[in-house]
Image 1 (spheres, rainbow, N blue to C red):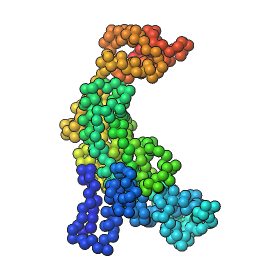
Image 2 (cartoon, rainbow, N blue to C red; image 1 turned 30 degrees about the horizontal axis):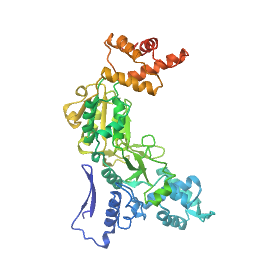
Image 3 (cartoon, rainbow, N blue to C red; image 1 turned 90 degrees about the vertical axis):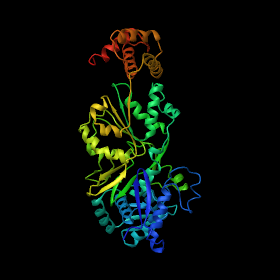
Image 4 (tube, one colour; image 1 turned 180 degrees about the vertical axis):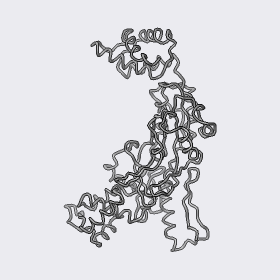
Amino acid sequence: MSAPAQLEYVEGVCRVSINPSVRRDSSNDGLDELFNRVNMLLGEPTSERRESAKSTEGFVPRQPRTMRETGVPPVMIEKIIMRYLFQVGLETSRKIATQTRLPFKVIEPMLRQLRQDKHIDLAGTTSTGDSEFVITEAGRDRAKRYAEECTYFGAVPVSLEDYVASVSAQTIAGQIVTKDDLRRAFKGLIINEAMMNRLGPAINSGRGMFLFGEPGNGKTSIAERVTEAFGTTVWIPRAIAIEGDIMRIYDPAVHEAVEDQTSASSLMDSQDIDRRWVQVKRPTVIAGGELTMNELEISLNPTSRICESPLQVKSNCGTLVIDDFGRQKMPVDMLLNRWIVPLEKRYDFLNMPNGKKIQIPFDQLIIFSTNLEPKDLVDGAFLRRIPYKIEVPDPSEAEFRDLFRIMCEKLSFPYDAAAIDYLIKTHYKAKTRPYRLCQPRDLLLQVRNYCQYHSVPLQLSPEAFDAAVLNYFSVME
């Protein structure tokens, strides 16, 4: 018999396909719940929630009202609660709800059932009337078995289907970047108008680009700031449940939360927001020469038995920067072959530790930053899938001088045009040395160290520039 409904992720869109031969009667309550949950995640709440959603815009995850609306099996929630109580021994019902990030009314029936089954017991009540639960010996035995499977006792995960729907609703491909947005994102960088006009359409494509050129001209700085041009936040789950396994999505080392989620929990509750999700700035994930193939696959911690999401999943709805492309430990062909289909289809296939393969969104702007010519690194088939190849050129003399002026202000140097004239005439034009965007900052830092050593005020001087140039360029040419 065909399934009544199926979630599909096709070209960045989450669709619900329905078997028309299935009647909408009382036996299909599960189908109604599926529709309600997807609509809730896509910002189209059911009638009971529509009133609380009037003040919000875009995608906002709504609190589940029942165990079924969490989207995960009740046994998974039970295991998380039992593992948590196994660690702490005794805890109030409200603290248990805070730990699982679920409303108390959702977990209350499970706490009653666990007490009825003699796995937890009522130890007393607090001065505010909150129940305190303690784990029993029978409960410890069960929790030990649960901990052998997985040690996770954090926020209850969301379902893979809900995560797919959230990425579709917040897709990077749906963002429009204007020239003003780029100027705001690149404030403090020297980028000429021609370069800006090439970057804008590439970013709006939501597909990917090559940034190439000589080292020191700001390719990495440009790539790091691209996401800021979007100027929006996204909601990501702390973890997702896949075939009984738990995979972390939220990574504090990568994702920047908009506010302290713990202190904001009461406000989130009042706004009917699902606290299993975190509001973060659109992510920028940077992988350099240390990138390996293992970082592009789901990894399983052998001790905790918790899965960690790969870099491309953590960067969904944001930007993934492959810095110093061509110098990774793995062959370039291996990386390109791994991503040639996801770049085209905007979804990826990942292998779970249990051997199953899952389909997951591949929804980010990928930037390959390299000092090498793209044509020398990859073949035509892959270049076709990266439609924008943008060279980051050397700055002009005027731009070079402007950058010195900007950096002098930042480093508290009084700007001295005569000293800059001496530097350019003596150490650049006389040596036919090319300008690089990183050099004003690097040389001024050396001049600052020179002044501090000689116990003189910060100032630009021929002697200080001579010493800085001698140190800076001694083995570079």
